[in-house]
Image (cartoon, rainbow, N blue to C red; front, side, top):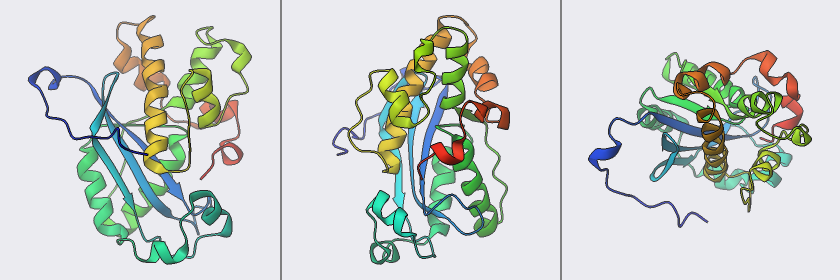
Length: 225
């Protein structure tokens, strides 16, 4: 599935471009008290360019028994997960990969909540990155007529990808979902650039995760862990 991810040499032309890390996590469920992360996928973006050779993907031992629904969705059995690495080293690698860059995600507040809790509990560190939510930006663009209002019901990653004519083969893999999210973000950047020359700071302002931004749809029911 991931033949398109290949390591590429960096050129001097990309050094000063604005960078984002597009992130997706797969979870055992949505209960912050009892559920946990089973995989993390992340891809570097330099402005609108998705850097296929600079990715992060780890499946980890959640240290708890996955729910039956989780096993069916992610196709990862408890036995397979038990053989995976412990989360502690993976979190350290993840923080090194992010390197204080802005995080982008679909309903990213959920990913951040689980990541913050794990990093605080296991590494005893605070984790408060700048973040941009593609779902909030999508609805901001629609409310202002830059996306046809006939798509107002679109909430899931697959539904919003379809609006932008992005082909989706198989979701519920953290790296693949991050790749789809990155393509959505590409389209959103282009639309924002068409109306605001200071697009980078503007995106961070309008895409900041907040409760009111999710009122377009109840993410607890929409987000598929």
